[in-house]
Amino acid sequence: MAVKLMGGMLEMADIVLAKIQITINLMPFLMQGLLMTFKVSILAILFGSLLGFVLGVVRTLGYRPLTAIIGIYLHIFRGTPYLVQLYIIYFVFPSFGVGFLNFDSFTAAIVSLSLYTSSYVTEITTAAIYAIPRGQEEAARSCGMSKAEALIYVVLPQSLKMMIPPMASIYVVIIKSTAILSIIGISELTRQGEVAILRMPGDIMFVYGLIATMYFIYCYPVLRFAKWAEGAFGSIGSVQDQES
Amino acid sequence: MLWLNGFYNFRIVGQYLNVFIDGMLTTIWLSLLCLVMSFFFGIFIALMRMSTLGFVWRIAAAYIQLIRSTPLLIQIYLIYYGLPALLPFGNIFDETQTAIIALTIHTTPYMGEIIRTGIQSVDKGQKEGAQAVGLNSFQSMYYIILPQAIANITPPLIGQTAILIKDTALFSIIAVPELMGAGLTMFSETVVATESYVTTGICYLLIYLLTLILSGYAQNRLGGTAWRSN
Picture 1 (spheres, rainbow over the protein chains, first blue to last red):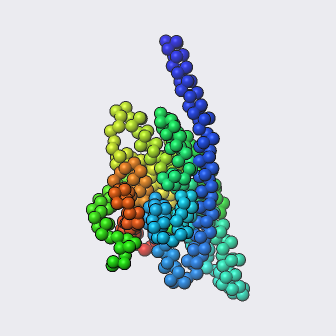
Picture 2 (picture 1 turned 90 degrees about the vertical axis):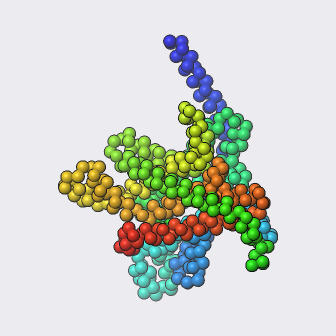
Picture 3 (picture 1 turned 60 degrees about the horizontal axis):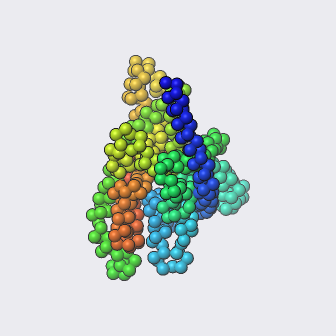
């Protein structure tokens, strides 16, 4: 009995050691992928936030045609899955025959992810600007500020603070969306994992588990930050609230 | 209309119209089923999360955090490859059933969090009042709190439904014949990227339009315009 138990434990130890060995061997390869995921998500959040912020501010200015155009833009990006957007930007845009739309896979990834991000950020910016009481702008105008001055010096600083929590949750959404980029061959974390599985097909579950852990390590602090920021800066409602 | 043919050849699309309609129907019933199931399980997760027993709410919280901080794609892979290995009787689910299981597991925590905020938004006096008239805790939850909670959370619930519908597109990767799969089928057979993918996008927009109309109807029906202003 005791010998059998010892044997079983030794077997277990062997398996655990083998898994640790695989982890050590794969880590540099997967870290490359994580770095790529990081790079793509940072670039996308940067460009997407800039575009989304501008669109969001323009949307609150009240020029009817612009508001309508931005509304259609939002509906298109909110109503279709990111996968479809990626396919259209990567496969359909080159067929327009316009030179600079002939994206390589990395550019297509950044462009599509930025546009996708911007649709979220536009909603957040608009909601954050509307969340500031009207009296603030009216008081600024009656102090003699112009409309632009009131927006830049009074309204935007307050709404920027309110934008922090939803922006953090959007960042998590974007990080998770980068997994889809594996389909067009960007060598980010998921793709690296798939390549690793081609090398060792016996450990599919283990490798995917490793990747999931790495995504978790990347996303969880951001989620915690979002939750903390909501307490610290107040909330304008979750992003889903604004979707409908 | 002939000028359009150079860019978007609707005759080819016409040949694949039935594929796209089938795909749309699959996407719709798949999302409906997942919506109902994840809402049902979401109520349990929300109640577990609000429990005062340490090990109960910790399990729920861990589940919610794990799902929220990993991509759906990885979850699909884990369930697609892992489910047959976990079950003693091997692979009994086909791709569509695996997809339904994966999407339900993915959406339940989000639903749970939405329902939890809804339950917490109901005034405490409602529960005390229910207990005062002699309802037990199940009855007060079922008759008093949940109806109000669900009316309060309709907007985020509709938003989550829209996300759910878009998430089904990922199941084209494990060969579920839904809308994105229809687009991929057409592309692999005809090699016309524009027609295939733009049509897929238009079909998704049609479904989105449908949810917008339905949600407007539901909002008017459920709570009138009273709570829409906030």
